[in-house]
Length: 133
Image 1 (tube, rainbow, N blue to C red):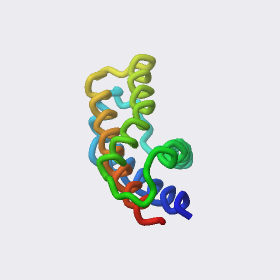
Image 2: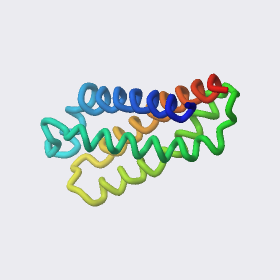
Image 3: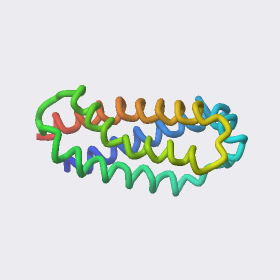
């Protein structure tokens, strides 16, 4: 039950974070960084799949290292932040492979997104893992 609740909470928060960050707050910045090559309408099923795979990986590792029954949001945020590093590394590699005209802007946007997700998801998972005993 713990992992189901954690997965659902993480999925909802990741989806909200992604939509707000990528499609509301910084869509124009992403378009500027990529010369407007972004899709007008994202392919949401692919985004859902990415969120699910990311959460499965995070929860597999998080479940091994986070103490169940203990509320430690700093530890939760740090764990998720460390687990989010491969996503950030992939974003940097994307900037190296594709024609991203504003590489510093693109990397800053992706780093900001990673930081926001680490804080929100890490806090939420620490709440779930502390309450589900």
